[in-house]
Amino acid sequence: MGNKIGHIKSFDGIKAIAILAVFFYHLMPSSFVGGYLGIVIFFVLSGYLSFEKAMKKGKIKSSRVGIVFCSIMKKVKKLYPPLILMYFFAFLIMLVFTRGDIGANAVEIRSGIFSVSNYAQIFQNFSYFDNIGRFAPFTHIWAISLEMQAYFLFFLFFYGKYTREKRVSWFKILALVTLISFSLSVVFLILGFGKTRVYYGILTRLYSFTIGGMISLVARRNETDTKLFNLQQRNIILFVLFFIIVESLLIFSPTNFMFYFGFLLYSLIVGLFILILRPNKSILSVLLSSKFFEIIAKRSYHIYLWHFPIISIIDNLYANTKISSEQHVTICLIMTLIFSEISYRLINSLTSTKRYFPINFFIFVGVLILTFIPYELISKSSYNSKFRDEMKTIINTREKIIEKNKGKLAGSNSTNVEGYKNFDDDEVIIKSSSKKNEKIKKYENDKSYNRVLKYIQYVDTFGNSCKLDKSLYTEYRETKALFIGDSIGLMSMYALNDYLPNMILDLKNSRSFVKSYDIYEKHNKEDIGDYVVLALGTNGRLNKRAVDKIYKNLGEKKLILTTVVLPYKNLENMINKDIYDYVKSNKNVYLVDWYAVAKIRPELFEPDKIHPNKNGVKVYAQLIAKKIVELENE
Image (cartoon, rainbow, N blue to C red):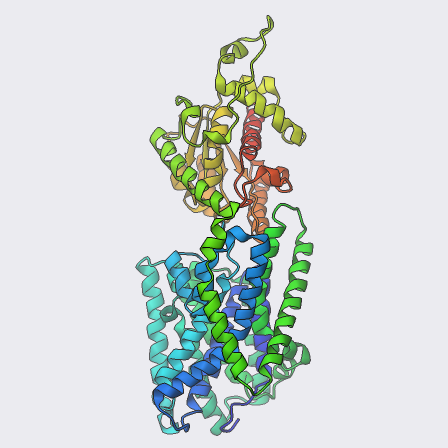
């Protein structure tokens, strides 16, 4: 490549594979469980190219600060026009369809504009892998922010300092930085800083970029001195490395191993692959230089910008429909290709001219507007925003009530407790009858029982899967059970208590399956009866280890799992599939299929399309009661 920074065509294939991996990970996470590693490929490749630029511009005569500033501005001119365009279009779409969510995403928009989106995610403790319950179409901008930060550091510390004689010294420096960055990531994990801090932080992800820089130095030596391998050896090694890289995108989920060692190992494998691929004479380099990969690579940045907002918005719009996975993938794919192509062509037409003032002006005005748009004010006037504030208050209050009463609400006057406004206060009066059995006589003046009879009349209209036999219900109304739930349970707790007043309700907001065994263990097994209901899943996938521990300790007791309804198609499918599979593969494990009943009934949900409203909680509670009553009657 001499002293020019030329275009290596085979790198197009690497970029194309990386963007496709990330896109399909977000679109079909259950099929492409390792697709998030596409970002690692981008980081290594970016480190390689950034270090190349930093090394090859040392002859420009200017102050160091001026050179670094000019280099950063060139990067800004390349990355910001498409970014600003995406933000504006996404904002307009949200303004029409999801206005209440604009304020909640203000931090993501502003932090993305100033290339600190990754730290916004850290400070808000928003996990990249467990981002449930939030409409967050701009989460993916963290990677662009991280790339900008790494680019800045490369030019700040390495620009103009490279000489051939100091090649080994610079390699050692980059190796030391790599070791320090990797060590920090491990130390942060051991000290309990959390995966979010490690995943998003520049200090703990810098090693992927510096590995790219090290490969750049080795490639220079390889080019000027001697080739590392002959053509045949290169072909064999490249195909092996390529297989490992692609297979990893399909099989390696974000486990603890990946956070401790996996990201480093994958970065090294990608770096070695780039090094050997670089001479452009192998079979694989020819394949990766094909027209298809070239087209995808040229549009890779635009595809990356648009794919996640489109997936998020489509998920939101189709939240209460049983759209098939195939239809969902097709719609998202087509819309992403359309918007990214429009963005690519529009930005190319603007930047093809040599007059840079329009682009500078566009960036300046775009950043100014996106910074000072009153997102919170626009969002505050919407019903969605008001609902979120009200629901937060209700959930916090109900958590305190559950804690105070230790999950036993049967003895409290529930109609006088905050939050009961979600239910109908009028009663169903049981008419006198000489044939009335003793249990009905017992419940004649029970307000809670009378309410349930009215609920049953309403819920029975939803079909046979919801119908509850009143006589059986009356017979087994006092059945004991333990209900372990999250915010769905908190929203439904009074209806659950009305249906089954002897059921212990252990409820907490943002609860996942991970701690479910610890929660189960703290309860006296004699008090919880013969049924344990695990109504979790809105905050993460089924944790088989935790649920297995509960299952093995149940003895003759029965375990009941509930499916979930989420406005995120693929995540919803993954969570429910885990639950379906677990029920199917274990005896004495039963299913309450909330998804099958409620998914296409938006009238049962609050505006977030996750939590049941005053009608939804009746259906939800009746499904739980129906399953327990039927099992008790067997």
